[in-house]
Image 1 (spheres, one colour):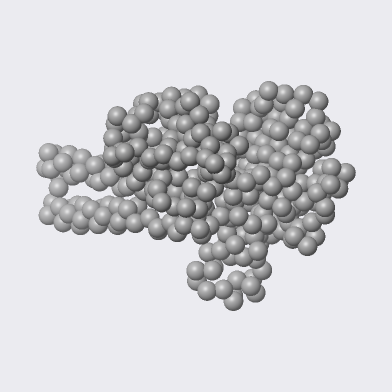
Image 2: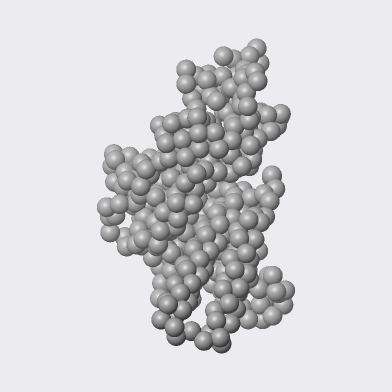
Length: 397
């Protein structure tokens, strides 16, 4: 329902408990998929992360909106404006920050797996919590499969493909590195992305007349200009269109592009990611961290078959969204390292027991085993501490 001001009314369940992912009664697998689709179509990942909200369910024109802070006026105003075009009612429900983080993490797992793996969703949010280690390990394994390809290293790409790339990727000069602090030296190892700055962007109405390579450069300049950018190449039966958004808000659309121009832009994107320009039979995702105007960002390119042919999305993560992504990567690496350490400890104990049974262990070897076991125990503790201390996300970063 709409208010007298034309905004959807806001209702809040009375006495509703704060949603926690430990509550196994919350939802079924189909509702999880609906939440993920709502993130895709109504409230983008970036918006959910920034405002700490989640579109949990849409039924009978009622959107169940999970909110870490149900009194966040900025979030309520944003969602109200979105729902005003849908003639929907907003129903608020409080959720914990842990639930918010875990469900967004599940969404990333859902997005980064193949269509078959994406169907293997947890039955309940409680099951997701109980099986989080298994689910995220599976996601880590998917990231190692051939379908996930890293963007070509900046040095090799600049030598072998520099002329064909729609944008130039270079490394910081040695003299620049010498002037950086130890923390900035880490940034110095990242490739630098060079695209047109805002002053060099041409008017939108002239973009369709540009050749594919120049058109992509102009599109990248707009997507990278600020905020969390997304570029979507949508193929239609006899033409194509390209949309770009910032922080979940649509900025502009290039309509009725000739398929030759559309395919040319798509091919330039694939070349920049070292993908074959041949038509892909399954989705491929490429990720790369870069520096752009002294800011750290992550480019996520996904090329996938569509109804009428290949389509693509390019997402730019920075600030809090990038920090969230990095925390997920750190958590996976910590679990992998802990698993390796524990496996080594198990093998060490097994070796020690066999030596004792065979009466081949002397006092010196026993002391060595004790020292190694102590070392591994300390290593486990350090890994756990690293994995359990994520840097807090700051809203609005």
